[in-house]
Length: 298
Image (cartoon, rainbow, N blue to C red; front, top):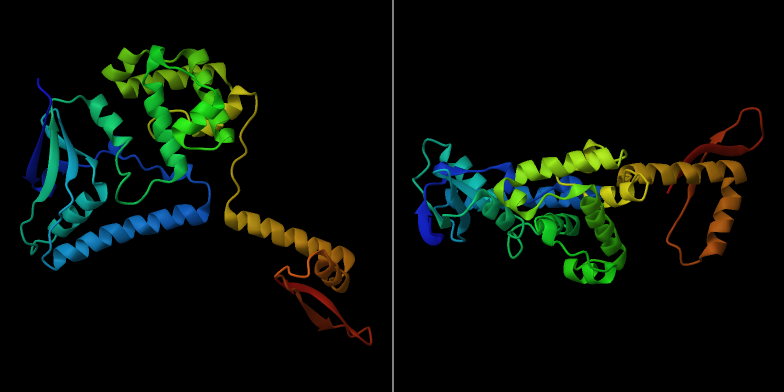
């Protein structure tokens, strides 16, 4: 079957949203604030499209759609499609269509590889961790033709630091050593190939647990890199947990040395340091003076 791409107007309700073709993975984003910001912006996007539709406006940016097994799967434009389908759920909604570039004659593998590179020039920008993982997954699909470059060359190709380039290099080598599926295997059934690689990695590296793989069963770069070195990557501490830990450590120091000594030492460390400590005191009935009550504001 010939491969064709045509511009069409499509009824949003016939479009299928399949998680396999959703290239976002917020679980790869370690910082709470960045993950929450991305999720908030995603919801804002949906709400904005929904509001525009309610005001009689239409969607103008074309979706990227692949026809597979007689059905139309969205590969780029998840948020726009979700907004349109939510809008059409209202019986009083006007009839709408959305512009789409419809790819016909392409395989499921083609659609999946395309999904890993889309949503770059518009929409909610992918976090660097998501971008690295998507490039890594495309890299693995080279199978027996894969070339593992130096950490600096990898860093340049992935647009990341040399340190992260080293992690990617180690993860690629680990996949090869465990038994990377052939290119033909990825193209025939990428989901089956990913599961095959997962089994091989778990057999070779005992520390590679289920949480070391992403939603599509591909190994997560940093976790695999650590396991290949006989290490277990520490679970990233959330911002709230980190702040609680720091606050407890400061409280322990104040309790050990006294609030006044701590405040004096703090000023001597850096006079420009924008920190202040307010010591709350309580009246001690057994003494003739007030003492620190153990509560501090930072």
